[in-house]
Image (tube, rainbow, N blue to C red):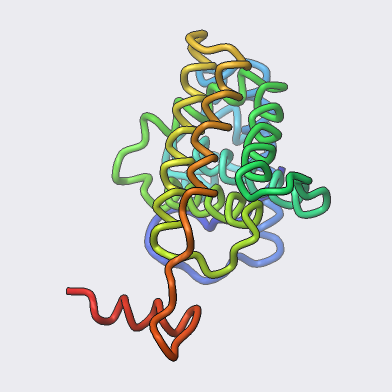
Length: 223
């Protein structure tokens, strides 16, 4: 699955083609190591050797193992997003489409449980120093859900529902990985939370204003 986020740290210029290729190799090697042995199998020296980069170079891209694994999760989600755009969900309602999308994502992770466990553990362990990578994962997940909903300009209430769905999906991953939930229970939880979508009408525009203009005005009027 492919890469998008930039190396950690302060804002930097876009990666060159060569740097991007190097970063992709690093993330690919990380996914392979995690897929074979889980969280503990991902060691920075082994990742550097497997991806053909110097250890110091690896640390310039990813300051820690946690940075690396969270970035790998964002990478996996981006690849999934690309696949979903090629084969979008077929449900009639937005709730059905989002539930189908998240179950497809879940099954993709289910096929590689060691990798899934390593990424979720890293996301759970991440502190403020990994905020850019964690935010990239959240943005990618939000984009996947909004695409399934068919929304380009969601209202604040709809974004709140999306956040609740994201939290539920992440919690379902943790409980399944820890053996405390079956696939059937995960599916039921995801379908239940996705029903919130159909119960949340879009924000009505003010008289004489529509869509983005109305919401922009509401935001500017907020304290």
